[in-house]
Length: 114
Image (cartoon, rainbow, N blue to C red; front, top):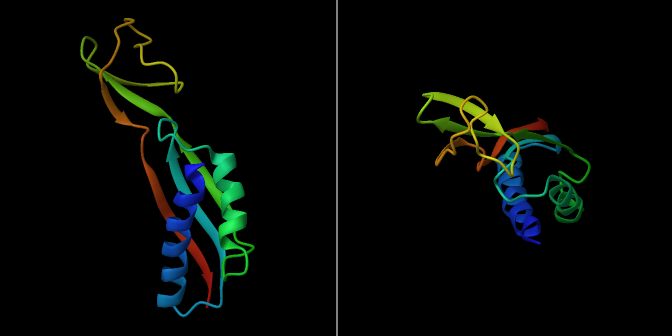
């Protein structure tokens, strides 16, 4: 379960931000995760409970925004989104080899109580 190691890294970053700001508590954490990032959002939520227990972020709300896979179709010259297990253009049926978005994982924001 690599979500545990991902959450450990994210937790370190969140707590670093909290320490730098002199915060008493972390109340919310917002992440963006691409549907092709290979991260299970539910497993990441569970890992957050474990990793953040007994820290300033112990009861923080974790919001995860899933970013759909977005491809570029060379024949059509257009972007399109697909479910994680597909990459065929809905207009012409061509398979795309150029992924534009969907593999990212980013810490978007941390809400703190000063």
